[in-house]
Image 1: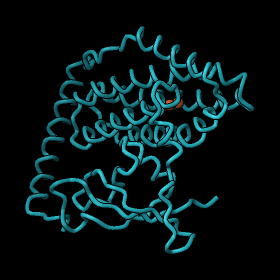
Image 2: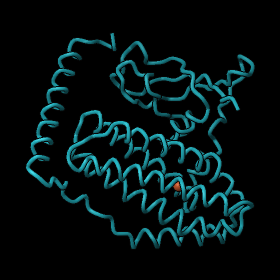
Image 3: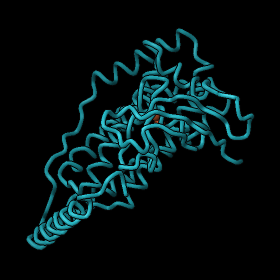
Image 4: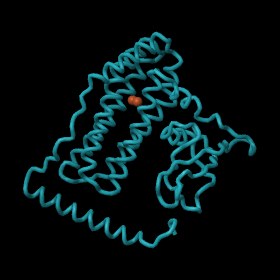
Amino acid sequence: MSKQMLDVRYQCLHPSCCANCREGVITVDEEAFVELCAFYPEEDVFRSPRGACRLGFNRAYKLVSVKRLDEGVNELHTEVVITAAQIRKRQNDPIALLMNEHQSILKLMARIEEQRARREVDALWASTREFENEIMLHSGLKEEEVLLPMLMSRLPLGEGLAVIIREEHREIVSILHAFRCALEDGDINDGVLGSVMMSLNSHIRKEDNEFFVLVDKHLTDDLRGELLEGMKKIEAGFVPVPPGERNIKTDEQKVAAAKRLQFHDDYLSIKEIANTGSCCGH
Ligand SMILES: [Fe+2]
Ligand SMILES: [Fe+2]
């Protein structure tokens, strides 16, 4: 099935935005756009996609208008993404709670990505542990222990959906574990972290736009209350695992780790020099 493409007119909200891309139109597929909107609570603000900001940052963009490319030139569709956005705004609702946690997880992932780009091994060691804790609480406990058992008996194909969700959780956790194993002696494996991000983005997009919207239709007020209570109880008893020390075992590993660190420092210095004097990416 081909992707639904959108033309999105925006204004950059950053106060010192480069004048060349302060406003404009970007073309993006609808699924990716929903994901970008998930970064901010406001319905009309979204995160700039990769490459849109000429300085290379991810900025907050104000949504001016949205147009589907396969429809009439003058037809605007501001209702895109509204279903998920409306659920997210509800108070004391278990599905809104899970969707809003997705936004926090995506923000944490964006911080990890920045640390990866700056080659900050120790910061990554701490932040990826924080990420593991978030995933354990959100996915392993609130979704798997509270939401999935409830829906398996009440939703058509509920058991099959639960298997898929659990499997995707296992995949994210196991790739993240591989990244942390390499990190333990100073290796920042860009490819592995890229796989974590890809799997996480795909999983969250599936839950927000398909799975949760479906679940939401089958929930009574009583069930919502039960789910919320179960999730809050689990959160109250959750004890996050501290990051602990990175485990560099031998002298050889210490020397190798020091060399890698020196290499990263040299790399950053060269990059800084190369960037000096550039203006707006030109
Ligand atoms: Fe989730
Ligand atoms: Fe999940």
